[in-house]
Amino acid sequence: MRRGPFLENLSKVNIKPEDIDFVMCTHLHADHIGWNTKLENGTWKPTFPNAEYLFAEKEFRFWRDTIEANPLEKFLYGAYDDSILPVISSGQAKIVRNDHDLGSGIFMEPAFGHTPGNIMVNVLSNNFHAKLCGDVLHHPIQLFYPKWYTNFCSDPQKAVNTRLNFLKNCANTNTIVLPAHFQPYHYGKIESDENSYIMNIG
Ligand SMILES: [Zn+2]
Image 1 (cartoon, protein in one colour):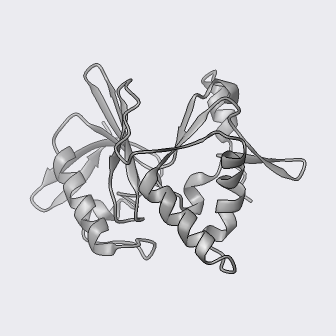
Image 2 (tube, protein in one colour; image 1 turned 45 degrees about the horizontal axis):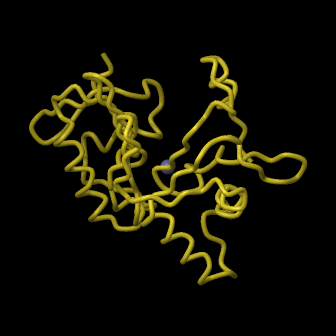
Image 3 (cartoon, helix red, strand yellow; image 1 turned 60 degrees about the vertical axis):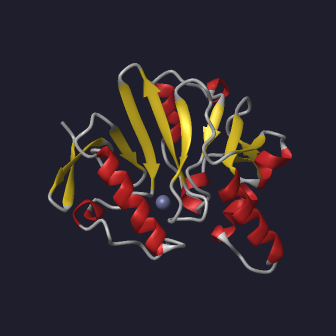
């Protein structure tokens, strides 16, 4: 039921939905799979008609198997039905390895814990490296308290370990991190200070 300016924002940088060739979701929580599809005359249709939707296998199988095994329970607020199934029906879904490499400097990286098959998306271009880290960093407070986790983490200890590794590896490098839920500024570089971190937006 959300309405945001996502497609308008894309068109401001001259990208039309038909131009999109790949769609990747870090994980399949309801707030990360919206815009996979859109509601057209009462039917959910893929938003990006020419895209291949790449799903990391561990994450995809976990939710598919869980939902198929418990047909009477409502998982993901019903978002599997409206944001994943239409993409499977249209033939645009492709299940890939958890470390799938598109071969163009873009590759997935396992980051399990927040969900069973959570991944990050890496983007490499010349000397530039960005990590779309999804909910590995959920809230800025986790820079100061990396061991804090959310009640949405399926395996809290694994989520904490993944975050600690991620922060340690990114700290004091040129890697730009893009957490999914940060308010402006949406991205920055990680700097470390003893046991806590900051995100430098400069
Ligand atoms: Zn989220």
